[in-house]
Length: 607
Ligand code: ADP
Image 1 (tube, rainbow, N blue to C red):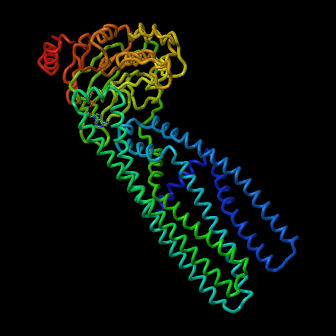
Image 2: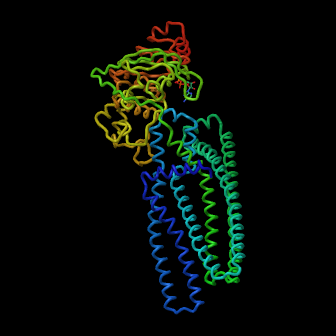
């Protein structure tokens, strides 16, 4: 295990000590208790044997026994309490482990969410035990401490005993020390061998698990394909079953191979451990017998000596094993620390957003260029445009022309690479970020409606203003459906958690997402393909009611269907990250250019 690995483990434990000092204290207490307890038995048994040999009276013998039994009992009781406390905490931490990760992903810069490396780190953490990483590390640290204390306790028991023996017997003094050194060297050599093998096997197992994590992700994906009817539709109509089956079997075969590999390493690892401990035990007993024959230790001492040395070697073996586990999994600790430590790059700003009575806001894009982090390609190029609150603006253009990116920039999910965006003359990076976000309500193409009660979905929170929520639902065109719901706003969306939940169609869910945007009552309402999941009738309804829906607010919507946008006063035509045309439908239709091209291409389908 490298120094960096140790550092990561300490950082992990350090982060724990901020909130859960009691866990760390109980961990240390527990380790010491469990390590020391066996030695009480070992030492007392040795003393008892010697006392019997020396023919001491039964009263003293009884006292030895009483002290031994009481001491062990008290330690066992204390240990029981600590074990209960520690395990309960461990279990709780296992349960709540996802919380810090989730909090981090909610607060991190948006760009990280679209970053493949960050995404993979999170996936790895989820799959390879990130949820219980802290609990697992704690449990291993507990074992390391316990075995460490056992090793020290064994040294404390054996060495004085040995020194006493050598003082009382001058002959053979040098020889016995020499033999002890040889024994220790042999045992240490065995331990080294075990360490090397343990390390090797643990690393191999960690690599295999990492590989399996990728395989499992694909396996899960393939399983999910069959879970709903949506994807099966494509699968069946395109006759992809054979392809699916072949892929699925390939993955399953791959997983089986990895599992077999892990099992192979586990068996070999266990075999090495057992062999080492059996051989050390043999050496120790032979040596203890020789010492007793030489008169260097007493008969009782043989028991104490041999048992202590065995505890010592066994603990060193376990210590090595736990250390190599920690080494093999230090990568996960690093993943966790890296993920939790992702820096906030986005400038949060301090200027409060002006609360205007007239709700007037003007937006200006000035020479804005943008490329996604890690990409060399500009997806927005030298964009200049202005618009005022109250305007209804549509953005059209081919796929990949930068329409969604334009919205992401306006909402500050990303900051511009060059140029600036100003709201009421002030660079948006200077505004207090949270207040700035409150200016926008966005319905993205891949909008999310959660399996919560309808009211909470619309209000995007626990506190629901019922009147406002119903009004928003009605304005979004889902009022009729709402009035048929027996549970009203308390009706749970979906049946995942509630038997009484109601399944809504894709179009209805989209309208609920629109209602949420209306409920937010912000100066800007942005809809990215707001009608993609709607049937033509509902689409017409949404567009016809758009003015009513958003009132005097600025509405920006992106649509592929040009027919939907023709009612807009202001249409922006995007091409390769630039606005190539701007105007009303009637003007653009007459001009030679992309709009006319797209319009004519689509008109065939409307005809
Ligand atoms: P539109 O909404 O017009 O279909 P987008 O704004 O989504 O287009 O995408 C514009 C370009 O940016 C596309 O070439 C797309 O591949 C690229 N792009 C979108 N998101 C990312 C991202 N997170 N990282 C890198 N490139 C991206």
